[in-house]
Amino acid sequence: PGVKAKQLVVEFGTDTLKIGIKGEPLMIDGKLHAKIKPDDCMWTLVDNKNIQINFEKFDNMKWWTCVVQGDAGINTKKIVPENSKLSDLDGETRMTVEKMMYDQRQKALGKPTSDQEKQHDLLEKFK
Image (tube, rainbow, N blue to C red; front, side, top):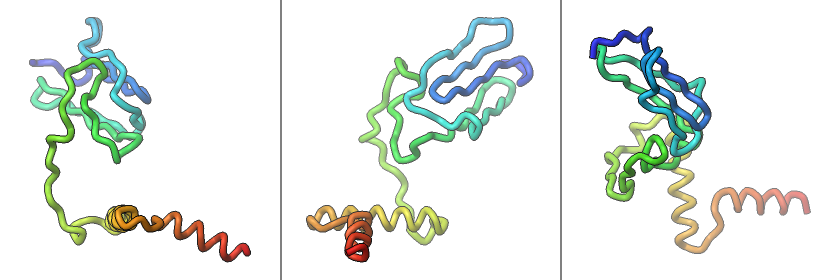
């Protein structure tokens, strides 16, 4: 409590995180659960006592069981995401979700996914 942002050390590596107060031992110095995009990450000091960190994951499709390796993990299978409507999503995200849903249905029916169909069509054109 009472610390100012300029007194802090916050460093993002591709797979590391360092947080501390300048001149003191680091509070966090560890390897992250998975890779991030350091240039797209940011941090904010909230109420001069809490550091809020926003990571941009390299792979947004995977849930992390912990932030720093060695920390207590959580069971991500118990997390129930909010229901959302496809119409609430932006165009690009909606297309990605619809493609994933289509591919899931196709796999369940034992049929080719959209990528496999595309590959088949290209081979047919080549013939």
